[in-house]
Amino acid sequence: MNTFLTPLLQFQRFFLPGLLALVAWAVWRTVFRKDLAVGLVLYLGLVIIVDGFMNTGIFLPGLEKGSIRYSELCAAFLLFNRPPLPHENSRRRTVLCLLGLYFVLLLLSALRSDPMTAGIFDFRRLIVPQIVALLVAMRGLRSSVEYRRFFLCLTALVIIVGLFTFWDLFFDRWILKGDMLNYPIYFHNRELGRFGSFFLNPNYLGAFTVLVFPATFIWMLNERKPWPRLYAWVGLLALFFCLVETQSRGPMLAFGVALLLLVFGPTGRISVRRRLGFFVLFITVFALFMPGFYERATERFSSLDKETTKEQRSRETMWVDTMSIIEDHPLVGIGFGEQQYEKVTSDYGFDAMDNPHNSYLQMAVYAGIPALAVFLFANGALLFKAVRLAIRGAATANAPTIFGQTVGITGFLVCILTEPSLFTQNVAPVYWVSFGLLLSLTTAPPEAAVENTPA
Image (cartoon, rainbow, N blue to C red; front, side, top):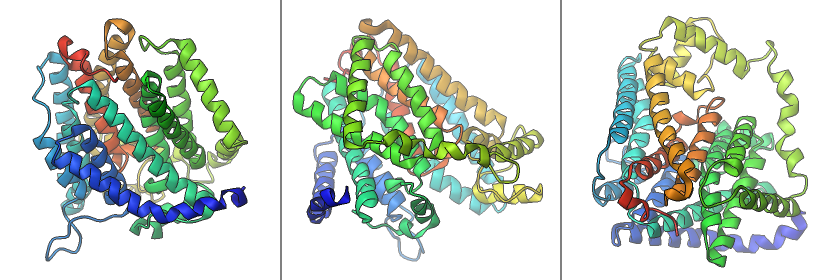
């Protein structure tokens, strides 16, 4: 198959100039046109590619590493040009108060780390970008035109992510080089035939696809013009291709849950028959381009029994060990950061672990069960409101958008049962942007509902 694809290598010379031109256009739209939709996607692109993959920032004199991220510079423009503060209601205040408490508890856990500087550094590296992402997105977008432009730009980012995996898989080449390519997080998985694109870790790429696919699928169904719809199809095919090449079991199971909700859930004007028909057509088209994808995607499930035996360190044993630590520190946790976690697990006599590979256990062991509880309550309050609006269907003009974001967030919450994706610097901000947009959509006053519907 590589022989037929070889002519595509001629296009690689255009990738870097094209990416630079795209970034320049996005910066111009964000800074001079104050385009929040384009700016949000630019922010996510900087978080994923520049901050995470390239591992670079704005270097300050006298410091070994850059202390200001490019995404934070972008966020400053977005925060300055956000829409006016929407009408507050009890639901919005409740969710924001719960999230504020959640982040405060994580900060207090960082202050309790030993050494404290390590905990604070990890908090700044992992949690501050999440807070920034929520702040830039929680007021939402101004109109249906902006929401449509957001999905158009997000699809461009998705295609770029897919291109990296495509080039790495078929040509053994990179479309961009980054510092993190020299670390085991990339080359160990690459040796196993698993691909993580700019996220490097296939599990993180899988979590990203689960989060983004549902909202993009619903936008595609709502799109009336043929060329944008075809463009959305390319983005969806890129996402599904990335998910297959991760061979990540947790994200695939979460994708299955999200898919059931996506096809049979309440979304207003888009019927179940239409959604099911489009997805069957989507799978048919994908199978034509990539026959045997199902066997490729499910290859690692055959080794599940072997990996859960007690002779090997597995997620099951990590979860059991972590829960025993939580039982001894239920209220305030052990402190924040992987270094602190490794130290405590070593003190308990467990095999060395960098994290429990479960985001819920990770927040509980870091900051105590109260931190886990407020996180779950905040998501529960938001999703409960979103489901009610989606069930109302045609009575709520923005029901399809709410439905797509709800399914994506729900799938992500299932996904992090087996992954530490909520404590990453490249996936977690994407979740909080989705959370912020959904919070804005579900708490917007009735007169704003029609304006916030994708065209």
